[in-house]
Length: 123
Image (cartoon, rainbow, N blue to C red; front, side, top):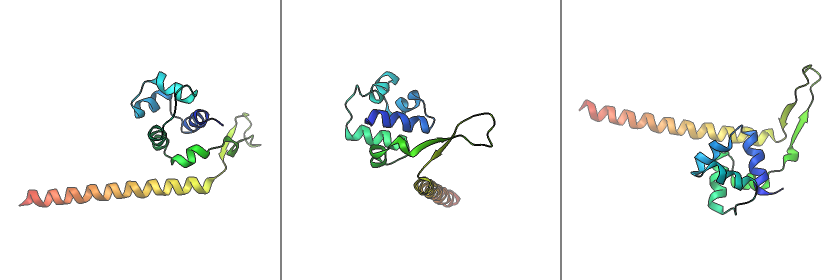
């Protein structure tokens, strides 16, 4: 699978628009579209920024295979809608846990800065 196709599939799984991705990358939507269609050469910096925007590491992006995504028609789903499942739930939970820890660290640092400023202002 071409890297542009992998990027498109992962972007769609995140429910991100091409406009959102372009904004995060600091390029136009047309330029971003060329990345997904393979019309633009990919460099390491761009790949890392795309992976960061998609909230995955570059290795995961490069090794992504949509075979791990499969459709399952649920017998309980009488409307006939397709339910998507991600094959590697453990990795997703680990990634989510890591993101939560990073957010907790940011909050802790903000509280520390606020407390320090509060103490300085009291004097």
